[in-house]
Image (tube, rainbow over the protein chains, first blue to last red):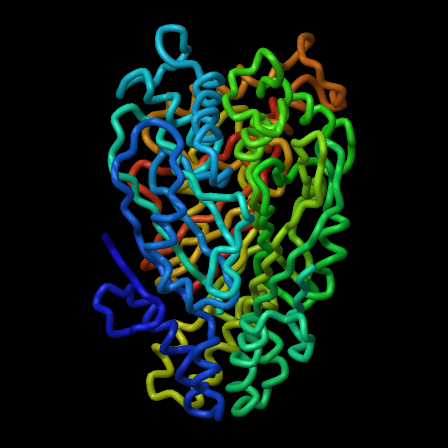
Length: 185
Length: 185
Length: 185
């Protein structure tokens, strides 16, 4: 898994862009500003990391704990910003929905299977990878592969009942990659 | 309601992060740049505000005027940027659609009720809060709870016929919170 | 077509905001930083451009090559960031899906026409512009008009099989405007 961190330029895995960004925002204020440390700490920051999620069974899965665990250290450095999640696949999706009752996730899977026909009765031409192939592509566009969540005081600023879901639309799941980009101050 | 403003650091309600951000981008140029005022004014800025929308009846509602009124002062300070809206709920949604004919909003509600079954015929397991509970969750993921709109010359750069809609999917509506994050120069 | 570029402030078509942003981030470090060129190059940058897509027939169209061609020069200057696409219309949509087999795009159009009724059997009140008018609005909200894609080392960091689609939901297509906003370091 690629990793990156906002704050420690020494980390070998840091994308060069992110290192240079921090350097840029800190250098001028460090040279001229009595409050340079505070200023540097509050300068615009970027972090980007690719998280690999293990294969999940077909259906909707709550991944908030996994995502927040992976980005907690970086996230804590942002007072105000945005966290962008991007799923690099076309047969799964990301959405935000209820974080408590697993029935909500099961009912959502029931709904998706109800509106996207699958099997002999389905009109799809694209069936290269089996009956669940084309339905997975359609479900991916219905829910989407990208989310942006506000960051406030070092945390994802979601509602009490909101959670991040990975919806796996294939029967034979593979690992799924999510590129997380943090941007803020 | 939380409030914040991009430009006046003295405002008590400003999140510390946003204040420090402005301070950072202005301090170095003020110290060293003959064009410091212009430069400072053009520095990267962040603003974040939580808007509380009063309860609305079930259906689709045009909220562009309410949103723009709440953020107009901050928005006017951005020449180029992005405005991010995040609805902190799982039984309502945000979408962008036609801003003129209310029939479009009524027909959209008709469509949502048509594809998401409700009541005795519905297969939902999650019915804790009534027959409109699970359908509301599904509709929330279909349209989504987050929008990002470009900012150009101090205004939301939407098309002539585009408006921001709050879609309320519950029969007994509650106030809805939208976290608005502005980022730009 | 409006155009803008991140790096050359002299370009007349540059939005003033973007010019001043670059000036701001470069001026302080140039004055005080031995690594000013590198620092300037790595400073927070914004670029915004409106791309006009020619009329397309009703259906789903892969537009990744057109979009990347339009923004390639700007994109190459970002090591880490986000690319935001915003379609300024309510009867077409943007989505990310499979970039190889055109059957996937045709099957997706088949699906959209299947779940959104059109013609005499449809319950729509909004029919001002014909039978495809209201269905186009609904499809626009189902897929959405906005996308955000991570930028890594000067390129859109999408998955191997992902492409950007413009879905045209009207029978008589018009040119479509996409506002692209790049933000990063």
